[in-house]
Length: 464
Image (cartoon, rainbow, N blue to C red; front, side, top):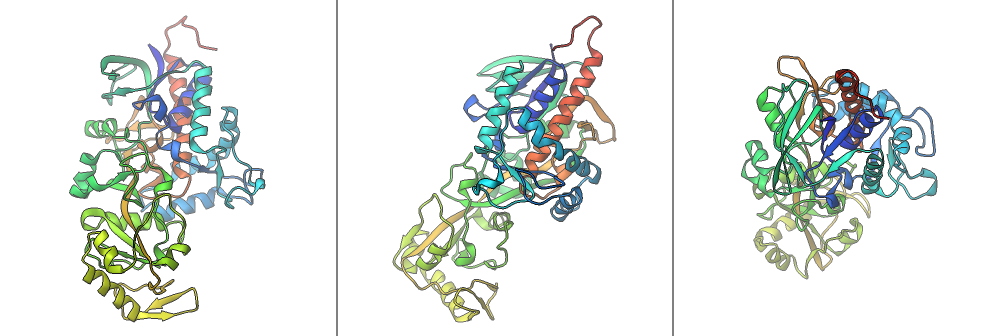
């Protein structure tokens, strides 16, 4: 029997496994994904958000605990646990040194290769390099890693010995441990679960990360009486290209450039001010709005000038010499798309050569309202891409899963996106998901090891 069983394969799981192993516990980590997909959503990441009180090779300026908490409050929808959010922010200070001690490398800011950021540190080589480093160190330390292994259920009140049914490469097995850390994420790759709140259009969502994060353990624990955090069905959505794969497309699938064109629904009509949001929040802004449309699809229409202004994409545009021909390519009514563009042109009021607004148009376009007159005309079809769900488990400061009657489950911990709604609520700020995973992964691993080492039979040796 292992001391600690960690379920998951992302940053939270590996931080938990490493923390427990370094504390002297024997550790087994099981991941439902195959080895080449190790890392969950963290494979697609770039950076994590960290408190720092002075400039360093990783950061310009400073970013305080209070600034971190202010950013979280702004997006949390009122669902943030203040105490746990503060704990996360304070302990994020430790992460650069600790992660580097596990083999993770960060990219210094002085080489001119990074966007200026006083809030986040970037991994050298991105999330995949970070995960590979953590996995390599875990294996070197003796953590047993099982790939292609799916834990079928976890009992909420199992006591001091956990026996978990699992399946590995088609064969049944039982995994046994004295304590369990669950880092298996939400249910963003489970359209059946999403459809309970989103309806049938949930099947049209594209999964930006791992297709293996289906949330069966999370949903089972909630049904057994685990205390919930966040809001059922709430999720982080981004506008992605409808040509993207059904899962694992990552950050490069995002659609951008909406202020330089017009966005229309499947009937060819505008439904949103394209100039309303031009900050980094624009990706989730459009993801939510496209998700609420019938069919969960929209089209960004650009002329040749607008396409040059828009950020480049890995996906080709739909292209035609006339708006009517473009409409037919997109299966839109040509007359309706032409009317949409004509009414937009009639409402244009210039604010300079690179800006403008509309008057008397509903919805308005409040900035970057420029004519679409230069052929050829282009379009990208937009779909909602789901990153993670904002519905999970409530935990305490020791990362123990809480029950609905307010009691902690000793020996059953959670870290990462399965409990992140406790801290993030229903919102997100860049890099915060990895911070949740790393901080609470460490806490969960440390607490699991501390508990299990007190439960070892007398005379059983601790690991060096």
